[in-house]
Length: 130
Image (cartoon, rainbow, N blue to C red):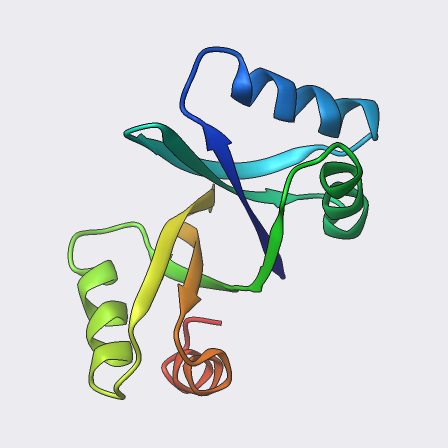
């Protein structure tokens, strides 16, 4: 799965313009997170069509970046995220971004961006998170 990161001016209407670009391209946002920092904001997106989204944003003048991310599944109960985070940390893997994708039954699916994608996939598969 790919995540799209876009930097925006931190002012009213900028997120709306980005969403309009995606809407006009027929792209649906599955999940996102973001925040403003002084004059700039950053939005991280998972869409139903990352290639179309990326190209539409590029064409509109944004500078989108694509990153590999992992979808991990943890139990929806106290301690589950701690266990997954320790599994990565004990293998020298740093979590760079983490946010909710959805809930499925008794599980939560998370978008996980790490500094060593392949090693993290191996660890998370071995530990039963993917």
